[in-house]
Length: 154
Image (tube, rainbow, N blue to C red; front, side, top):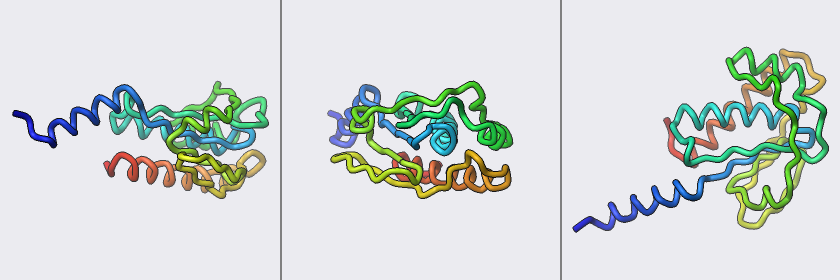
């Protein structure tokens, strides 16, 4: 006869397979900070083998035409490619359905039942590469912390 622990573990695995955790990264233009966060989150998801357990969403409310060139360059330095991605709109419904939403210093969301965090980060759009690197590195640190907190340290 299986123990209660075994039953709980298989129930958790079934729930994870059916209903992944949704992590959402948003900023107004969806051209810099949220794109960097999304790229780091996709890397973390893959490196941790969480492809079936984590859905990653990104978007903005007043979209830019393209991801900032300086962001593409800064991410390429750490072997992450966002060239060719386009900013996407994010709906209130998508935000409300998320498990976690990180805004990038541009929102005071109040989403009942959703864990939200405003990452007070400068917009990298018109900044020199040296400043964007510092923003990129802070975003990477925060994304890893989100994954460590939710899924355990590597």
